[in-house]
Each structure stands twice: as structure tokens, then as C-alpha cells.
Image (cartoon, chains in turn green, brown):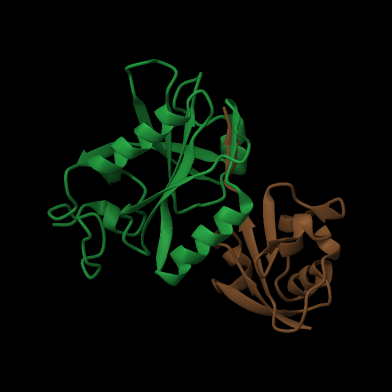
Length: 163
Length: 91
């Protein structure tokens, strides 16, 4: 059995390994009160986040984030060379809820990515949510945190599992 | 000058799904004009009021053109021009 997320529109759920979700939260906590941001790469067509790359926030700001352009070029080239895509693009909100702001929506330019937001506004409570943002339309999706992709049908079966 | 232009996912609707396409020009501006002639509508996604859109990164080889003359940045035969939408947002 395959869940419908395998095709043709893999946007109805984010399936993510618990260690990767924990790393996003840890990065957000570490950079608080500035916004933290990063990418999780995965094999093209798999919809499976595997390789987390915490990025510098070039704005170093509590209310804005932007990938450093030189670092972004390097990371995007690495993904290209490895037949990977940005499966997850994450950033934190440090004083508001984990919901895309107007700016987030206006600037979202990766239609195939899961946009993950984490809020660090409350000490001790980690709010991590996931969205598709396509042509200015936000669709929240459930987040399924699992221990391993080994037994989860998260994508095409001809891509080897990494963990 | 013949260059190769790397196209981001969001603009591949203009290039029939192609990840990279050939173009001609001596500057980034000329390359974008040539791209637009071949793939209509792409210029409007990159240029606003005669300058590069604030949230679009354009690189000639490894250099962000924002620090190399912007649209007037020169390109040489065999160069790679990479277009990447900035990843950015704000609370």
C-alpha cells in the first residue's frame, strides 16, 4: 500500500525523522532571539528529508531571515550534483506563532518544498508546523514524526533509504 | 558570448521544464533580454523598473552580480549564469 503522498501531489503530509525535527528545534533555540533558517535536502522525487543543512541568517534579525547568497549557491550546487532537492525549508519565528507571515508567503519560491516553521516564543514549548506555499496560497499539512524511513512509504521505492 | 543559464524550479514553466538553457550576451542584462526573447515572460520575473528584483539572486559563475555591477555585470564566453530565488521571509 502506498499513501497518496507518493504521487501525484506529494503535499498532504510531511513525514520527517525525529532526529531531523529535533535538529530544527535545536537550531532555532540556539539562534533565538534571531530567526534561524536552513534546508533539509532529499533525493529528487522522494519527498523524503534526509540531509539537514543549517544556514546562516544573513539578516541576523529577530524579525527577518535570508539565506546568505554565496552559501545558498554552494548548497544548491551540492544538491544538484547529488540529485537532491530542498525537501524542507525551515525557519523560526521568535515572537509569533509558527504560521507563515505575509512576507513568508510573498517570497516563497520553492513550490515543491515543505515550509517548516518553528516558534521559539515560549520557553519549553516547541511549536513545529509545516505548509505548502504555492502562488501565494498557504496550505497547512500534518507533520508525521517517525523514528526511521525504513518502514514508511514516503516516496518512490527505487531510492535507497538512508536511515 | 554564449553562456549557459541555470534556471530555478519556479521559472522552469518558462523553459519547458529545462534546468539549463543556452543564451547570448555580453552583460547579464543582455543575457536576460536574450532569454526573454526565447522564453517569453522570464524577464518580468527577474527585473523590476530596470534593476534586478531584490529577492532574486543572479550569479556569474561563483559571483553574486549584486556585488559585480548588477545587470551590467559582464559575462564571458562559456560562463555559467545561475538564477536562484532568494530564500527569505520575516515574522
